[in-house]
Image (cartoon, rainbow, N blue to C red; front, top):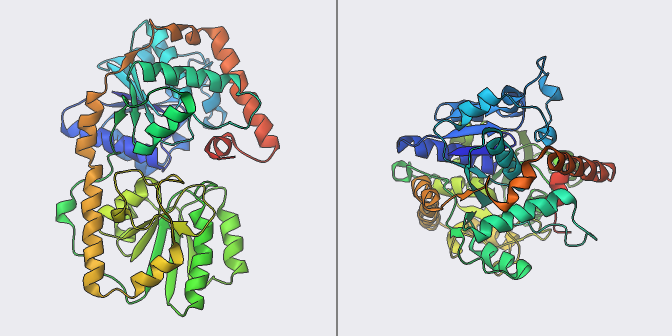
Length: 428
């Protein structure tokens, strides 16, 4: 399997891909990565882990150029129009019979690579964020690149080559499209392994809270948690909150910490090396977050409160162990509860109550097994692309139009002070 992705920065999809490669290696399965950016734009630790279990190629290795481009000049959005080194593309494809992507852009790249070698490589796509193919409802018209992305998405849907990792997304996309999405590959992401060897969880005498993740707009809990901590302090509870991560909302969070005078109990810790995740997170009494980090924390026996994405209210569905199924990130899934009330209740638990909650989280996390996910991936049949109606998208003219659309749309929103990723992830 070939994973095609933008970078190996520290993030939920990226760490999931690496876990999948590790799980596949244990089964003797070949895995390769094609990263559509320079290595300098990826996290060194994650790259090292990926290289230990798979072959990893970066965009600069497949570009054909009379001189070596500096990493700063290698732009992800231009990867569809860079001239390619056919010999390296051939090397990447050796031993590979299918590719997997998380977005339409990378799907277009797979189609281009297949056309270079005239190899009808199979493709599967995973829906890792609910907004990936549902954003832009308020725009008068979707840009060309997104209309093309959705054409591929719905083609793969018809070919039963889609993977959903959230039960609620089946209903959402069925409603949006008027199509039946009940036949997609539906299973939880693989996040954890080796849970049976965990040490007994120890709790502190006060509320020791923590979050780990990129500081981005849709992870709104990073802001409302500051109001929660402020209220807990007002109620007389001793509390500490550590926030690990980096991103565009970091300064906004820092300013709010200052405005609420929380500098002595809330700490922005910056980036956390993945190798340190277990050690650091295990010390928290409660983890607050979303994505795969929430599952990883639960797998460590840390009671984990769900930070609902794109929700500005200080409310939550509660602890991960309390929800049915494996959907938990999106707004509108289950009844909400006051986050303050949950923390206040937890502070009154005795040690036995806390241990029961810890064990319930470990059990819940077992649903998100990497080994099971590897098996589930193998059950989804890839769809051949080169000889499909989508083959026209590999032409130089279409690739130029597509790239121009991406660049111009990105510049339009950049002028308005937003990145393309923020527009896609926004519910507005």
